[in-house]
Length: 211
Image (tube, rainbow, N blue to C red; front, top):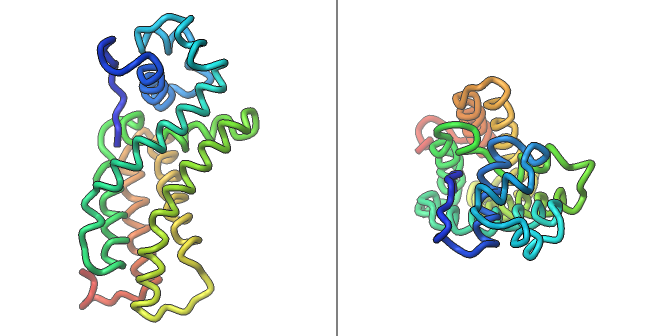
């Protein structure tokens, strides 16, 4: 996933540099702790440039969530978990891929939209809704494979492809919270291991067809 790095003045325009700064700083320290002055210093732009592009810090928060959705959508679209021919193997490969990219500090592997939503869901509904569009939009990319796997394996149960897609995000976001609380990325990887087992049970995968 995109990692927080200090951007050089030459890279991108002022608006993009501010969004990249928000992506880095909010993941590292939270939205409330990130000031406009700090964003401007990190992006190497003036405060006037900030307010030229964003009418307020809250407007920046909405744009940052949308920027996160835009930049990560391409990252996931190009990821290797789409390669297997079997749809269930694509779903399991997605879980394995999400586990594999849990590397480094939480600011490097956690989700900006999830971080923002946890912090501002009650105080900034516009940001919350932008985060929701990002998280639910990503979940929606898994629905077709899950539904195809249900049909291929003849699964007739009281859950839907949409609900399982959302559950994957609940586990991933919860894993990020545990990794932060325990200061241990392995806690997030552990959550993905359990998600893999759960999906295999839902689809009645036995030992002989586990791969």
